[in-house]
Image (cartoon, rainbow, N blue to C red; front, side):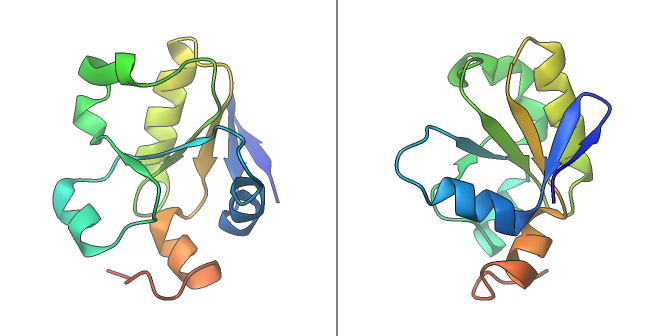
Length: 113
């Protein structure tokens, strides 16, 4: 189920998976976790950009394309999603529950930590 928090829409992992599976829709799954977290568990096809590097690497993202932001549990990604929206990104979502929920609800082969 999709819900809205402030200006950011939360998207459940299963809903995102069904939308992302449709060829090609141009969604960026932005993983804002630290490098050690990505080394532990990752979603194939995601773009890793640690939270603290987002402001300095903003030009690597397309402000006109949909962006789904992901972290471990959904809190850091919510902050980054709000930052992106404040910077003019038009279509930003937060993956509710983060990679932990992804592992539980979509792909149990993704390790939990």
